[in-house]
Image 1 (cartoon, rainbow, N blue to C red):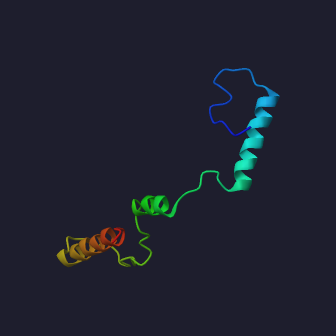
Image 2: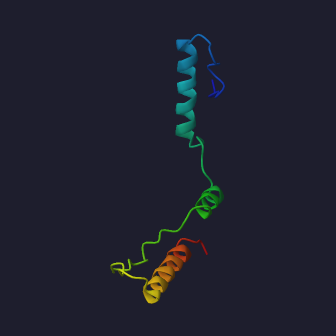
Image 3: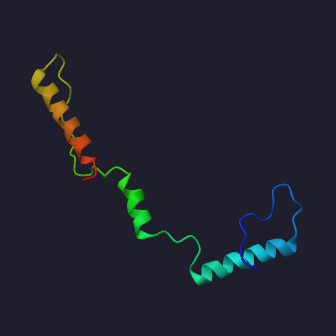
Amino acid sequence: MAFDPAQPANKSALSSALMRSQLTGLQANIVAGTADKVTQSQLSTAISGTAVNPINVQPLGQSADGTYNPSQFQQYMDKLDELINATKRP
């Protein structure tokens, strides 16, 4: 018997014959290589919706100035822009 994802039905009594049949059907699908194959297109679509790893963005490596320092604040803004741009997919 082929695997039937609707079996066993909700709140039905479990039957060893039904469960054995389901497991045998799953095993046959696995051996045949037909169990939930993901296509390259599906994989590409899933990956395209994720962020890029920003591993190449280096830390600023500095401490905060005790007073407002426009130059330091601009470095912070530039680094934030770099991080945002690094996580975008082309």
